[in-house]
Image (cartoon, rainbow, N blue to C red; front, side, top):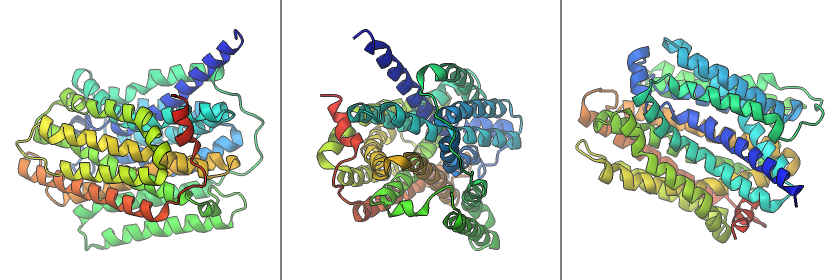
Length: 479
């Protein structure tokens, strides 16, 4: 018994570091939300381009995730995990010290590159640490899954506290001590890497997919300013499609591609990734515009705005860890995914009734808690299905794919809803009715995305012959 305690303690520490990594890389997408108005004033962002503080991170993160997963396979997950934290630390310092728009976006891009190394390595390390015990793996995956949406919503609260009582650069500086602690504990807690695997790195593929995603998001964000009938509005997305098409062609012809295209033939893998993409495309615009509504319409300052979404954070964590695995074990991933997306759509439609003279208790709290429930119900089953559908030897690729799907959905969903809101009055600072109308329509657009996700999940997801480990075993660890 005395020999087993250190081993258990090491596994707990490993799970803490892995969950913290997932929490931080997702938190960094949302922690800037409350600080955006201050950053806009001090750095000179235009209303149309303000979302690039978010998109510069998410596009780099999502575009480089497949490369990050491949680097982890070749050089070792622990090495890439550590390297990612170093890169994130550097990017956070640059973003916090930036005095202009260009440096700010560079810093955010470097942060995203670090996150792209951390996220797939973290999931690979989790599987390596707990994969030998299905019971332990189920509990670890449940906590890992909860860290993502909890990080997203907790970032809003932390951003409010930091912006109100310190200053906006500290929403980036907060990563520095966290990175130093993780780097110091990696060698103690996480399993060592094996020998380096021989193989090439598909740098061209990584550049093509990142450039294609960036160009696509840029086209959507610029459309209201350029005009929906302009050559730029239609030419830029055509270029994005061409780059992504070339990426697919390169993957089909390379002997060691960044992403083996045939992996999408695996039942449920493509469907689960599509569900994750649309889930993120509906969820991320919700907190983005809810923040703006609280500050720009209801007049909340930074701290109250972040605190207003703290109940959603707590409820997300509770339902993600305690409720969602049990329901998924009973009803299966398809029913839970469809139900969660429908609930999220209902919450977003509820939010679309926000008023100029609204208040937190009526216009924000009930709908935000319902949205948290929908997110929790859909996230765990789609994550578990996406990972468990792939064979064990391709777990790294599967984790990279599902992370990529979520980040790509985040970027495209926010870009589309930002353009939609801007075209309907959300850029008219000080005009409260116009702002409210723009935000309301953005919530309706996000609800449409969630409903589309529910419909596609109902059509494409199959009932598995065996439930993913995350669903059956997560509940077993708590009985």
